[in-house]
Image (tube, rainbow, N blue to C red; front, top):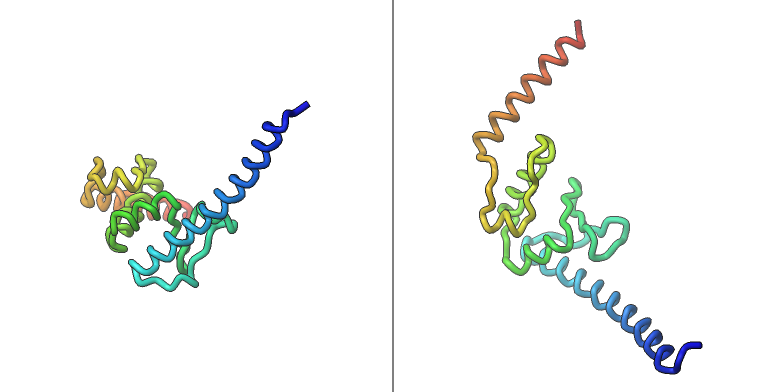
Length: 139
């Protein structure tokens, strides 16, 4: 049998969890507003994936995805849209070529990364290889 204190503790925990969730969602929405203001974006073109507020936020026709943690970093460090897109493009390249995908905080601190020349060279090589493969398919 539960003591009165245990029951009160469970009730307080229920209320606290509900309050924490509400406060977290308000905070996450606040970061969206701050990011949109900072980058001059129309908030109406963004959405939380699967309506999971505080998960991944997407924006625009391309659905550029930003995790809540990245959004916090972007806002708190006042990272420009162009700087973020450089990071985003690098990560897309890294995924395509099976390379390490750095987190945003490490990127902003100057973590090791492949040079633009290396990325362009490898991308060109891949395009050439794809073209050769397509030629073989046509014969």
